[in-house]
Image 1 (tube, rainbow, N blue to C red):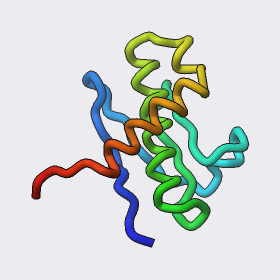
Image 2 (cartoon, one colour; image 1 turned 90 degrees about the vertical axis):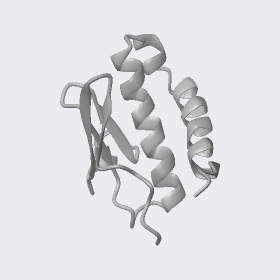
Image 3 (cartoon, one colour; image 1 turned 90 degrees about the horizontal axis):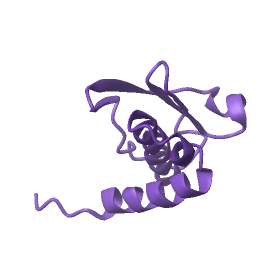
Image 4 (cartoon, rainbow, N blue to C red; image 1 turned 180 degrees about the vertical axis):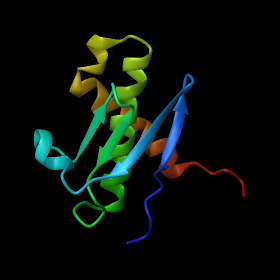
Length: 101
């Protein structure tokens, strides 16, 4: 599998958020990724358990949970349907962007 296009960490409004590959991420809540707001961490399944595309989509999904938490949109942060829809759009932009290089 080609290495997923996922950062090891990033900043969001002055907060550094780590991204960790975790074999037990799905054990927590029967999902493949988890956003921990207090510890500023995103935990994702190892690439061997999900496809590259799915892993990248999971990153955008969990990143959006963090973004909504940071801006105080708790109701939207907890709305999985909204987070799935918007993170899917962001993932598609990232996947298809032509940066001209």
